[in-house]
Amino acid sequence: MAAQFSLCSDIHPRYRRHARHGDGWSAKPTMSHRNTTMKTGLPLIRVCAPLFAGLFMNVAAHAETLTLSSPTIAPNSTLPASFEFNGFGCNGLNQSPALNWRGAPTGTQSFAVTVYDPDAPTGSGWWHWMVFNIPANVNGLAANAGEIGGKRLPAGARQARIDYGVEAWGGVCPPAGDKPHRYIFTVYALKTKTLDVAKEANPALGGYMINANTLAKASFTAYYGRPAQ
Image 1 (cartoon, one colour):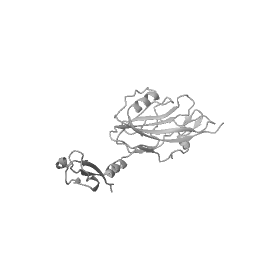
Image 2: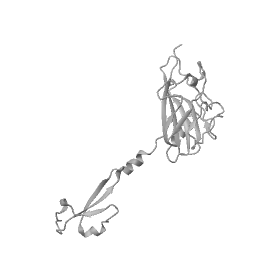
Image 3: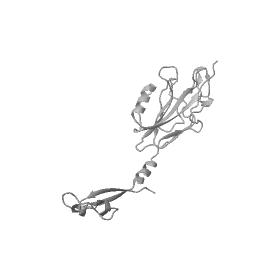
Image 4: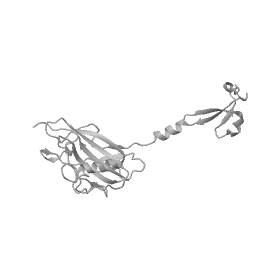
């Protein structure tokens, strides 16, 4: 039930005809306001209106927040080896994980998804995946949707060129012996249906276009390392 409060104001009887009776308003002299005014000697009248503060609190409580999850990756966990790259000394299956999201804000026209390693020894991190133009009625990506050609992507979705130089998922492959790297998975709710990103554009431009059109975003981080050889 909503909490009820009263907002009260003292008015002069001369203006009491403007105070409404009914509709939750009341006008009556109170014990503490039987003093008279300096000029007229007439008593003040207190007018009270109920405020249903809980109503506004309940509305706010039901507003959803954008969230991102994966059925195969728990936040702050170690990534399975199936998501490791196949090449550059890595021997994984190079598969992208399934992802799910919910709670998109009003006005969302499309989604984008990125996977980024801020710990890669490049000076600018490493982009492992970037997908955009995902329709607004889609709430997830299937396992291995990041394969070359994107046959498992939702209709209309596109993959941007990543730091491996391909338009696909590029699996994790930190240098052997490094402290486990962070891999940040992010979904973005965008205010536009499509992003005009050229096929040959680099990930920095894709990231700029995504962030420039973001209404909300949600992330989780997972870790992956390889033993020293």
